Length: 371
Image 1 (tube, helix red, strand yellow):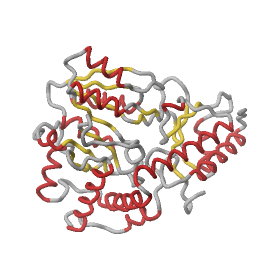
Image 2 (cartoon, helix red, strand yellow):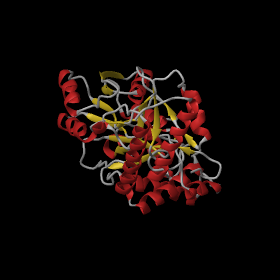
Image 3 (cartoon, one colour):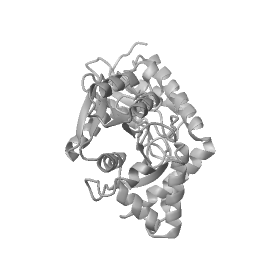
Image 4 (cartoon, one colour):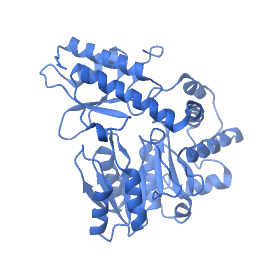
């Protein structure tokens, strides 16, 4: 299935959006316009409700991709003299480490295999062995593989030990259940172009109010000063700098659809059905998932590349693209893979169609796979 002449994006963002979401970007908005400011406020209110963080948390939207919001949170919420533990089982965990290095924030890496989830036991052992650690920066769902890390258990571990927890929930928010109020989470970060099915261009940080209000002047950047953005929006109802108006309006439309669908439970159920259909179809072709089923999140699936002299990802990508589907290359360090996303405005039938298109592409390239 192709919407018009556009391919289906089987990627973890940008992703295929619904017609109503795209239509919301056809109107221009003034950045100081009261109607636009109300859209921003309503978006932030709904994001807090989705995360069950209405009582203790505030929402701070940030211009840019999700990584902009991650850097804003790390650079604004962590004081000098702190040390951050980073469980590392993939490329986006490694990106957090790179940000901390660039910002000059002390950190300790907890190295894990790319198919090994971060657990509360491993985090607890690292915290207990180094009293200088004050924070944990955790990727909830590592998009480079699709592996799910144990957020709830790790949050409880941090809460019981008095450690701050900052969570990159980029590819999990909206698809997986998260509760902020009363949890051990101090800040959670995501973006418009993931499981909320909006376009890319707006990140957001859901931060504990008391923590955010205590970090004025701490940011290591002007544009990525989370407290300054928060304080200015509270005072004026406006963004400090030019906002991504079309993206915010489209996210409002996407949130309306998210709520009408039934919220996180319904969205997560659709993605689980998508993931199940994809894996079944790909395994029937002879492909092997990289992750064990018990740690596979229903957002993006990594598959081992075929062992064949005829396989080349570039040729494979183009053949599948001509059939109407866009895949993602692998992002692992030690084995050749490719990734297929399960999210966006698509259903299980689309995943069956995608697997069939992949099978035809492999046949056309002369790559034989045996179920």
